[in-house]
Length: 195
Image 1 (cartoon, rainbow, N blue to C red):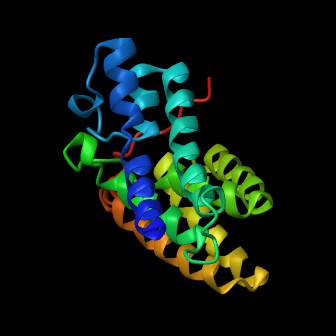
Image 2 (cartoon, helix red, strand yellow):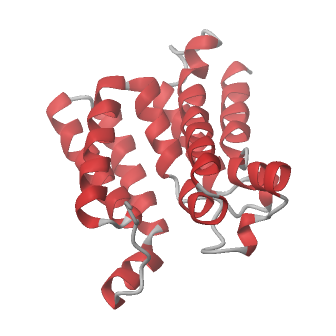
């Protein structure tokens, strides 16, 4: 029963559409009707600005973190692996029941899993993310590079559940960015403006 509860709660946590709710509550905008139409943090930054973008990023990260910690909080970590709860939250983020199953691209919520399970790896990937973003100026490309870097790093940690989950998350992230890959090749993908 508790395992089922963790699964349901993890999915519902992931399903919280931070970008949609922040946009509607504080800006009177449905960000699905603007920009890329995506509910994630990147589109929030572009449509609503830095303040909203940072808020949505933090909320989306915390969804993954809280879901990952649920088995421990509910004292069932010996029955369901924390990473499984985290990945269920990512599925909820991508296909949220509270937003017509149209969600984000899994990046921030995946990062939240790392924060809850391997915080040192999370800090390392934050560094990788910002260095890559500074060099490439593409959020989409940076997200995929960071996911791949996390997967490669996990092999050195010799934590098989982490390797498997990061492998799945990397596939999720790269697949969800397939349209971005085409735009990068075509030279039409928006770049981050630092100044």
